[in-house]
Length: 351
Image (cartoon, rainbow, N blue to C red; front, side, top):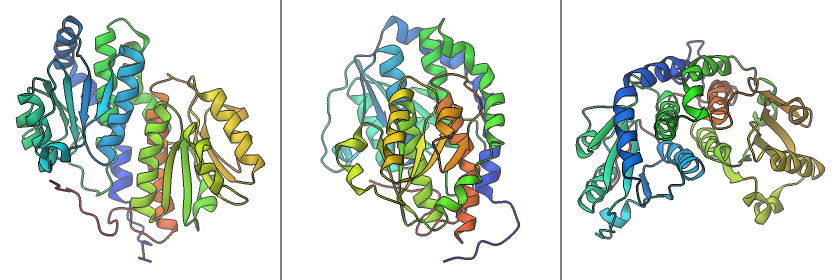
Protein backbone atom coordinates (compact mmCIF):
# COMPACT_ATOMS: atom_id res chain seq x y z
CA UNK A 1 0.00 0.00 0.00
CA UNK A 2 1.01 3.59 -0.49
CA UNK A 3 2.63 5.51 2.34
CA UNK A 4 0.43 8.39 3.55
CA UNK A 5 2.29 9.24 6.75
CA UNK A 6 2.90 12.89 5.87
CA UNK A 7 1.70 15.26 8.62
CA UNK A 8 0.56 17.80 6.01
CA UNK A 9 -3.26 18.08 6.10
CA UNK A 10 -4.88 16.57 3.04
CA UNK A 11 -6.64 18.66 0.42
CA UNK A 12 -9.66 16.43 0.89
CA UNK A 13 -9.92 17.30 4.57
CA UNK A 14 -9.31 21.02 3.98
CA UNK A 15 -11.96 21.14 1.27
CA UNK A 16 -14.48 19.23 3.36
CA UNK A 17 -13.93 21.70 6.18
CA UNK A 18 -14.53 24.56 3.73
CA UNK A 19 -17.99 23.25 2.81
CA UNK A 20 -19.97 25.22 5.45
CA UNK A 21 -18.61 28.53 4.14
CA UNK A 22 -19.29 27.42 0.56
CA UNK A 23 -22.87 26.54 1.49
CA UNK A 24 -23.34 29.98 3.03
CA UNK A 25 -22.05 31.62 -0.17
CA UNK A 26 -24.31 29.52 -2.35
CA UNK A 27 -27.43 30.32 -0.35
CA UNK A 28 -26.72 34.05 -0.63
CA UNK A 29 -25.45 34.24 -4.20
CA UNK A 30 -28.07 31.98 -5.78
CA UNK A 31 -31.09 33.32 -3.90
CA UNK A 32 -32.42 35.63 -6.62
CA UNK A 33 -31.94 33.13 -9.47
CA UNK A 34 -33.54 30.35 -7.42
CA UNK A 35 -36.54 32.52 -6.53
CA UNK A 36 -37.04 33.33 -10.22
CA UNK A 37 -36.79 29.68 -11.26
CA UNK A 38 -39.12 28.63 -8.44
CA UNK A 39 -41.77 31.17 -9.51
CA UNK A 40 -41.66 29.77 -13.04
CA UNK A 41 -41.91 26.17 -11.80
CA UNK A 42 -44.87 26.97 -9.56
CA UNK A 43 -46.70 28.46 -12.57
CA UNK A 44 -45.67 25.58 -14.84
CA UNK A 45 -44.89 22.48 -12.77
CA UNK A 46 -42.75 20.02 -14.74
CA UNK A 47 -44.35 16.89 -16.13
CA UNK A 48 -41.40 15.06 -14.59
CA UNK A 49 -37.76 15.68 -13.71
CA UNK A 50 -34.73 14.10 -15.36
CA UNK A 51 -31.39 14.28 -13.55
CA UNK A 52 -28.16 13.98 -15.52
CA UNK A 53 -25.00 13.15 -13.55
CA UNK A 54 -22.30 10.61 -12.77
CA UNK A 55 -20.34 9.58 -9.67
CA UNK A 56 -20.78 11.75 -6.58
CA UNK A 57 -22.98 14.10 -8.58
CA UNK A 58 -25.39 11.24 -9.32
CA UNK A 59 -25.60 10.54 -5.59
CA UNK A 60 -26.57 14.19 -5.13
CA UNK A 61 -29.17 13.65 -7.86
CA UNK A 62 -30.62 10.74 -5.86
CA UNK A 63 -30.97 13.10 -2.89
CA UNK A 64 -32.80 15.42 -5.31
CA UNK A 65 -35.11 12.59 -6.35
CA UNK A 66 -36.24 12.11 -2.76
CA UNK A 67 -36.60 15.87 -2.32
CA UNK A 68 -38.67 16.42 -5.44
CA UNK A 69 -40.88 13.37 -5.09
CA UNK A 70 -41.51 13.64 -1.34
CA UNK A 71 -41.73 17.41 -1.00
CA UNK A 72 -43.07 18.52 -4.41
CA UNK A 73 -44.70 15.45 -5.95
CA UNK A 74 -42.49 15.62 -9.06
CA UNK A 75 -41.63 12.21 -10.46
CA UNK A 76 -37.84 12.16 -10.90
CA UNK A 77 -35.55 9.73 -12.72
CA UNK A 78 -31.84 9.55 -13.47
CA UNK A 79 -30.82 9.70 -17.12
CA UNK A 80 -28.60 7.08 -18.73
CA UNK A 81 -26.30 9.28 -20.87
CA UNK A 82 -25.48 6.41 -23.21
CA UNK A 83 -29.08 6.55 -24.47
CA UNK A 84 -28.03 9.75 -26.24
CA UNK A 85 -24.28 9.34 -26.75
CA UNK A 86 -24.04 5.64 -27.67
CA UNK A 87 -27.48 4.67 -28.92
CA UNK A 88 -28.28 8.00 -30.56
CA UNK A 89 -31.83 8.08 -29.20
CA UNK A 90 -33.78 11.25 -28.38
CA UNK A 91 -36.48 10.52 -25.77
CA UNK A 92 -39.31 13.04 -25.60
CA UNK A 93 -38.89 15.41 -22.66
CA UNK A 94 -41.60 17.92 -23.49
CA UNK A 95 -42.68 19.71 -20.34
CA UNK A 96 -39.91 18.15 -18.26
CA UNK A 97 -37.26 19.74 -16.08
CA UNK A 98 -33.75 18.43 -16.81
CA UNK A 99 -31.14 19.09 -14.14
CA UNK A 100 -27.50 18.29 -14.86
CA UNK A 101 -25.10 18.15 -11.91
CA UNK A 102 -21.32 18.26 -12.19
CA UNK A 103 -18.27 19.63 -10.42
CA UNK A 104 -16.30 20.40 -13.58
CA UNK A 105 -19.04 20.58 -16.19
CA UNK A 106 -16.57 19.10 -18.67
CA UNK A 107 -17.81 15.56 -19.28
CA UNK A 108 -18.97 15.23 -22.87
CA UNK A 109 -21.77 12.76 -22.16
CA UNK A 110 -23.40 15.07 -19.62
CA UNK A 111 -23.19 18.02 -22.03
CA UNK A 112 -24.62 15.95 -24.86
CA UNK A 113 -27.44 14.64 -22.67
CA UNK A 114 -28.41 18.10 -21.45
CA UNK A 115 -28.25 19.49 -24.99
CA UNK A 116 -30.48 16.66 -26.21
CA UNK A 117 -32.90 17.30 -23.33
CA UNK A 118 -33.18 20.95 -24.33
CA UNK A 119 -33.86 20.01 -27.96
CA UNK A 120 -36.47 17.51 -26.76
CA UNK A 121 -38.49 20.16 -24.95
CA UNK A 122 -37.14 20.22 -21.39
CA UNK A 123 -36.28 23.26 -19.33
CA UNK A 124 -32.57 22.75 -18.66
CA UNK A 125 -30.68 23.63 -15.48
CA UNK A 126 -26.99 23.12 -14.73
CA UNK A 127 -25.87 22.80 -11.10
CA UNK A 128 -22.13 23.15 -11.60
CA UNK A 129 -19.03 24.49 -9.90
CA UNK A 130 -17.28 25.82 -13.03
CA UNK A 131 -19.50 28.60 -14.32
CA UNK A 132 -17.88 28.91 -17.75
CA UNK A 133 -17.91 25.16 -18.40
CA UNK A 134 -19.47 23.49 -21.46
CA UNK A 135 -22.27 22.14 -19.26
CA UNK A 136 -23.13 25.61 -17.98
CA UNK A 137 -23.17 26.96 -21.54
CA UNK A 138 -25.55 24.18 -22.60
CA UNK A 139 -28.15 25.08 -19.94
CA UNK A 140 -30.85 27.74 -19.89
CA UNK A 141 -30.46 28.25 -16.13
CA UNK A 142 -27.19 27.93 -14.20
CA UNK A 143 -27.00 27.46 -10.44
CA UNK A 144 -23.30 27.78 -9.53
CA UNK A 145 -22.00 25.88 -6.52
CA UNK A 146 -19.71 28.72 -5.36
CA UNK A 147 -17.43 26.10 -3.82
CA UNK A 148 -14.19 27.50 -5.19
CA UNK A 149 -11.57 25.36 -6.90
CA UNK A 150 -11.64 21.77 -5.73
CA UNK A 151 -8.21 20.16 -6.08
CA UNK A 152 -8.63 16.86 -4.29
CA UNK A 153 -9.68 14.05 -6.60
CA UNK A 154 -12.32 12.96 -4.08
CA UNK A 155 -15.12 15.52 -4.30
CA UNK A 156 -16.37 16.85 -0.98
CA UNK A 157 -17.41 20.50 -0.87
CA UNK A 158 -18.83 20.34 -4.41
CA UNK A 159 -20.98 17.34 -3.45
CA UNK A 160 -22.28 19.00 -0.30
CA UNK A 161 -23.07 22.25 -2.08
CA UNK A 162 -25.02 20.28 -4.70
CA UNK A 163 -27.24 19.00 -1.90
CA UNK A 164 -27.66 22.53 -0.61
CA UNK A 165 -28.51 23.84 -4.10
CA UNK A 166 -31.19 21.19 -4.58
CA UNK A 167 -32.63 21.83 -1.13
CA UNK A 168 -32.67 25.58 -1.80
CA UNK A 169 -34.63 25.03 -5.02
CA UNK A 170 -37.13 22.68 -3.37
CA UNK A 171 -37.57 25.08 -0.46
CA UNK A 172 -38.15 28.01 -2.81
CA UNK A 173 -40.79 26.10 -4.78
CA UNK A 174 -42.57 25.19 -1.53
CA UNK A 175 -42.26 28.89 -0.65
CA UNK A 176 -43.63 28.77 2.91
CA UNK A 177 -42.33 25.41 4.10
CA UNK A 178 -40.09 24.38 6.98
CA UNK A 179 -37.21 23.54 4.62
CA UNK A 180 -36.89 27.11 3.41
CA UNK A 181 -36.80 28.36 7.02
CA UNK A 182 -34.15 25.84 8.05
CA UNK A 183 -31.70 26.50 5.21
CA UNK A 184 -30.17 29.74 6.57
CA UNK A 185 -29.15 27.78 9.69
CA UNK A 186 -27.58 24.95 7.72
CA UNK A 187 -24.00 26.31 7.36
CA UNK A 188 -23.68 26.66 11.13
CA UNK A 189 -24.96 23.11 11.61
CA UNK A 190 -22.52 21.85 8.97
CA UNK A 191 -19.69 23.47 10.93
CA UNK A 192 -20.86 21.56 14.01
CA UNK A 193 -20.92 18.32 12.03
CA UNK A 194 -17.30 18.84 10.98
CA UNK A 195 -16.33 18.60 14.63
CA UNK A 196 -18.15 15.29 15.23
CA UNK A 197 -15.84 12.65 16.73
CA UNK A 198 -16.03 9.49 14.62
CA UNK A 199 -12.69 8.07 15.79
CA UNK A 200 -14.51 5.06 17.26
CA UNK A 201 -15.03 3.78 13.73
CA UNK A 202 -11.37 3.70 12.75
CA UNK A 203 -10.51 0.39 14.40
CA UNK A 204 -13.63 -1.29 13.04
CA UNK A 205 -12.79 -0.44 9.40
CA UNK A 206 -8.98 -0.21 9.54
CA UNK A 207 -8.44 -3.70 8.14
CA UNK A 208 -11.80 -4.28 6.43
CA UNK A 209 -11.75 -5.55 2.86
CA UNK A 210 -15.52 -5.41 2.40
CA UNK A 211 -18.33 -3.49 4.06
CA UNK A 212 -21.96 -2.48 3.67
CA UNK A 213 -23.17 1.09 4.02
CA UNK A 214 -26.87 1.30 4.83
CA UNK A 215 -29.40 4.11 4.89
CA UNK A 216 -32.94 4.82 3.82
CA UNK A 217 -34.61 7.76 2.10
CA UNK A 218 -32.38 10.81 2.05
CA UNK A 219 -29.84 8.79 4.02
CA UNK A 220 -29.73 6.16 1.27
CA UNK A 221 -28.47 8.87 -1.09
CA UNK A 222 -25.87 9.69 1.58
CA UNK A 223 -24.96 5.99 1.84
CA UNK A 224 -24.22 5.88 -1.89
CA UNK A 225 -21.74 8.73 -1.49
CA UNK A 226 -20.17 7.24 1.65
CA UNK A 227 -19.62 3.89 -0.07
CA UNK A 228 -18.01 5.57 -3.09
CA UNK A 229 -15.61 7.54 -0.90
CA UNK A 230 -14.60 4.38 0.98
CA UNK A 231 -13.76 2.83 -2.39
CA UNK A 232 -11.90 5.89 -3.65
CA UNK A 233 -9.88 6.83 -0.60
CA UNK A 234 -9.45 3.54 1.29
CA UNK A 235 -9.59 0.98 -1.54
CA UNK A 236 -12.36 -0.79 0.38
CA UNK A 237 -15.06 -2.75 -1.42
CA UNK A 238 -18.01 -0.92 0.12
CA UNK A 239 -21.54 -1.38 -1.18
CA UNK A 240 -24.48 0.90 -0.40
CA UNK A 241 -27.94 -0.51 0.18
CA UNK A 242 -31.30 0.84 1.17
CA UNK A 243 -32.22 -0.46 4.60
CA UNK A 244 -35.23 -2.09 2.92
CA UNK A 245 -33.29 -3.52 -0.06
CA UNK A 246 -30.70 -5.09 2.23
CA UNK A 247 -33.32 -7.59 3.39
CA UNK A 248 -34.06 -8.75 -0.18
CA UNK A 249 -30.88 -10.79 -0.55
CA UNK A 250 -27.72 -8.90 0.43
CA UNK A 251 -28.29 -9.67 4.11
CA UNK A 252 -27.32 -13.28 3.33
CA UNK A 253 -23.66 -12.19 3.36
CA UNK A 254 -23.91 -10.75 6.87
CA UNK A 255 -22.41 -12.89 9.61
CA UNK A 256 -20.21 -12.58 12.69
CA UNK A 257 -17.66 -9.81 12.29
CA UNK A 258 -19.06 -8.40 9.02
CA UNK A 259 -18.57 -4.60 9.10
CA UNK A 260 -21.59 -2.38 8.42
CA UNK A 261 -21.83 1.39 8.56
CA UNK A 262 -25.46 2.38 9.13
CA UNK A 263 -26.59 5.97 8.62
CA UNK A 264 -29.51 6.67 10.92
CA UNK A 265 -30.32 10.40 11.03
CA UNK A 266 -33.69 11.14 12.59
CA UNK A 267 -36.20 11.01 9.74
CA UNK A 268 -39.39 9.05 8.99
CA UNK A 269 -37.49 5.81 8.20
CA UNK A 270 -35.67 6.00 11.54
CA UNK A 271 -37.85 3.42 13.40
CA UNK A 272 -37.38 0.88 10.59
CA UNK A 273 -33.63 1.54 10.48
CA UNK A 274 -33.42 1.06 14.25
CA UNK A 275 -35.11 -2.35 13.93
CA UNK A 276 -32.65 -3.27 11.17
CA UNK A 277 -29.71 -2.32 13.39
CA UNK A 278 -31.06 -4.62 16.10
CA UNK A 279 -31.48 -7.43 13.56
CA UNK A 280 -27.96 -7.00 12.17
CA UNK A 281 -26.58 -6.98 15.69
CA UNK A 282 -28.29 -10.31 16.37
CA UNK A 283 -26.50 -11.76 13.32
CA UNK A 284 -23.12 -10.80 14.76
CA UNK A 285 -22.35 -7.90 12.41
CA UNK A 286 -19.84 -5.31 13.60
CA UNK A 287 -21.84 -2.11 13.54
CA UNK A 288 -20.80 1.49 13.17
CA UNK A 289 -23.88 3.69 13.54
CA UNK A 290 -24.07 7.37 12.61
CA UNK A 291 -26.95 8.87 14.58
CA UNK A 292 -28.00 11.69 16.86
CA UNK A 293 -30.25 9.50 19.02
CA UNK A 294 -28.70 7.80 22.10
CA UNK A 295 -30.79 4.63 21.61
CA UNK A 296 -29.24 4.08 18.16
CA UNK A 297 -25.71 4.87 19.29
CA UNK A 298 -26.08 2.45 22.21
CA UNK A 299 -26.58 -0.44 19.75
CA UNK A 300 -23.31 0.27 17.94
CA UNK A 301 -19.92 -1.36 18.33
CA UNK A 302 -18.61 1.98 17.04
CA UNK A 303 -20.94 4.91 17.78
CA UNK A 304 -20.54 7.80 15.33
CA UNK A 305 -22.33 10.80 16.86
CA UNK A 306 -24.17 13.38 14.78
CA UNK A 307 -25.24 16.82 15.98
CA UNK A 308 -28.69 16.86 17.58
CA UNK A 309 -31.82 16.74 15.43
CA UNK A 310 -32.03 19.63 12.99
CA UNK A 311 -34.23 18.91 9.97
CA UNK A 312 -35.34 15.53 8.52
CA UNK A 313 -34.04 16.44 5.04
CA UNK A 314 -30.91 18.30 6.00
CA UNK A 315 -29.69 15.89 8.68
CA UNK A 316 -28.47 13.65 5.85
CA UNK A 317 -26.35 16.55 4.60
CA UNK A 318 -24.83 16.78 8.06
CA UNK A 319 -24.17 13.03 8.04
CA UNK A 320 -21.98 13.27 4.95
CA UNK A 321 -20.29 16.40 6.31
CA UNK A 322 -19.34 14.46 9.44
CA UNK A 323 -18.19 11.49 7.37
CA UNK A 324 -15.63 13.24 5.16
CA UNK A 325 -13.02 13.96 7.88
CA UNK A 326 -13.49 10.36 9.05
CA UNK A 327 -12.84 9.10 5.50
CA UNK A 328 -9.63 11.13 5.40
CA UNK A 329 -8.46 9.71 8.74
CA UNK A 330 -9.40 6.16 7.77
CA UNK A 331 -7.54 6.36 4.46
CA UNK A 332 -4.37 7.50 6.21
CA UNK A 333 -4.72 4.76 8.81
CA UNK A 334 -4.98 2.20 6.01
CA UNK A 335 -1.84 3.64 4.36
CA UNK A 336 -3.42 5.56 1.49
CA UNK A 337 -3.22 9.18 0.37
CA UNK A 338 -6.83 10.42 0.19
CA UNK A 339 -5.85 13.11 -2.32
CA UNK A 340 -4.43 10.63 -4.82
CA UNK A 341 -6.75 7.65 -5.19
CA UNK A 342 -5.39 4.86 -7.33
CA UNK A 343 -6.39 4.89 -11.01
CA UNK A 344 -8.41 8.12 -10.73
CA UNK A 345 -8.08 11.71 -11.93
CA UNK A 346 -9.96 14.86 -10.97
CA UNK A 347 -11.95 15.35 -14.17
CA UNK A 348 -13.40 12.21 -15.75
CA UNK A 349 -14.50 12.63 -19.35
CA UNK A 350 -16.84 9.99 -20.72
CA UNK A 351 -18.93 9.59 -23.84
